[in-house]
Image 1 (spheres, rainbow, N blue to C red):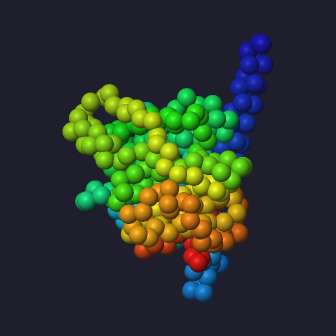
Image 2: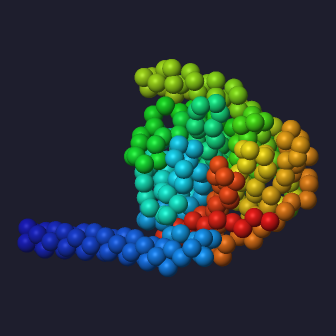
Image 3: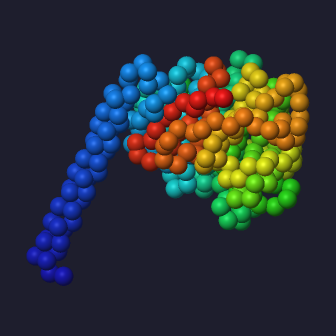
Length: 318
C-alpha cells in the first residue's frame, strides 16, 4: 500500500473507532435512562414488589446474588461466564454503589455467590462451579472478607478451594452457606428431577482464611483441595440458585419456574431430612431468566434476572 492509501485507510479506521465509541456511549446512556424511568414508574408505595431495574450496565447476565452484611439494603452480584473475576454492588433502589475485583482469580463460569457472618466477621463466597457439559476436573470456590459495597475494591487476599465431587463432574449453579451448621451446600443442576446435594465443611476453611489474613503480604495464595460430601437428594429439576435463612436454617431454592422453601425445624435437622420434605412453593416474578436468589437479614427473598438492565425483585413468600 502506498503512503496515500495508507493515510486513507488510517483515517477510515480512526473514524470507525470514533463511531464505535459514540455508539457504545449512546447505548449505555439509553440503558441507564431506561432503568431510571422504569424505577420511577415503580416508586408508588403500592408497588413494593415491582422490580427495580439496576443502573449497572456492566451487569448483563446476573448469575449470583448476595445481600450485604456490611450495609443494609445493599447487594452484590456477578455475571455468568464470559466476564472477569469481579462483583458489582448496588442498593435496593437499583443505584450502583461499588465494585470488587478478585485479583488473579479464575472466572471460567461463575454461577453463584453467598454472604454470611460468623462472630464479628462478614464474608463473601463466590463459586466458579458452572459445568454445562460435566467435563471440568474441579471447580473453584473463593472465600474472603466482604469489602465495603460503597467502594471500588481490589481483593488480593482470599482463600481458593479446589473442589471435586465424589461421583464425578457435575454442573452446579446453586450454592448456599449455613454458618450455624458450618456447611457450604452445593446443589447439582439437571433436567432430571433427581440431583445430589453436596456439602463442604466451613470451619477448616475459615481457619485457613485467617492464615491468609496473617500473611497478606505474600504473593502466593494458598489453594485448599477437598472432595465434597453427598448430604442428600433433591427432587427438583433445573436448579439455578439457592440461599439459606441464617436465622431459621430454611433453605430456599429456585429453578426457572418457582422458588421453593424447605423448612428447617428443628434447627439441627440434617440436610438429608430437610431436602426430602415437601417444599412450600412461591411463584417467581415475571422477569427474564432468573438465575440468582438471596435472603437478607430480615428474611426477605430477592432475585435478579439476566438482561440489561438487570432487574431486582422481591419474591412473595407463602
